[in-house]
Length: 110
Length: 110
View 1 (cartoon, each protein chain N blue to C red):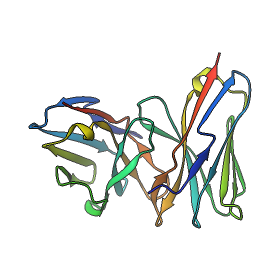
View 2: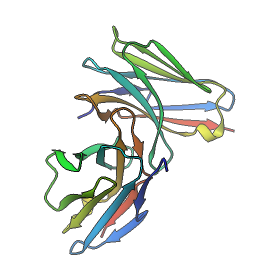
View 3: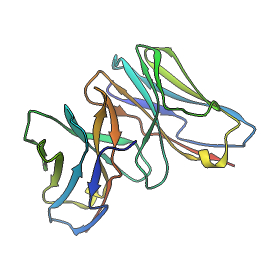
View 4: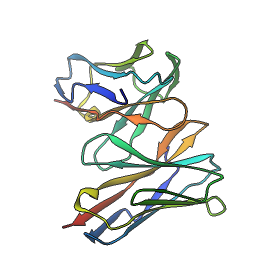
């Protein structure tokens, strides 16, 4: 398996909802990442997990809460989001060199 | 924060023509990567070139790296309509976290 799988592909949520994004890889990669991408902009790093430990938080608001339950799974819990949080959320994994990205979750906050 | 800057921002060519896009960066790197992103989808890793390499090929792709000028180029030969996408260069922050430039939007007309 050489893929990073993200679910759901699309998500529409209200500002009072709680939802979670899921990312899964079975390549044994030691690092996993969450990126946020607005339209016509490059992906921006949000979080990095290395060996299941949070190693980088790019000053992301607390309404985004990452979780790494095991070496294959990465979640992003969402709560009380704002419309400006609408974006494509990308997950990636890496063994150290080279990165594999998932196809993303298109999130719309209404 | 972005380190790589792609040029041009947009490129429109006819099928069969070659497409060249450039990336400049600011600090020393140990590798540089190029990615493709089809509209609203995940990023696909194209090529990684290490700082001790000057040129690398993969199918119709040719990447060069000039560390003295802190620049890289991606050449797509004999372009096809399916090459229509955004192309990003990524330089590592620290030793391993990819940081993306603003991208080049390529349109290949059939």
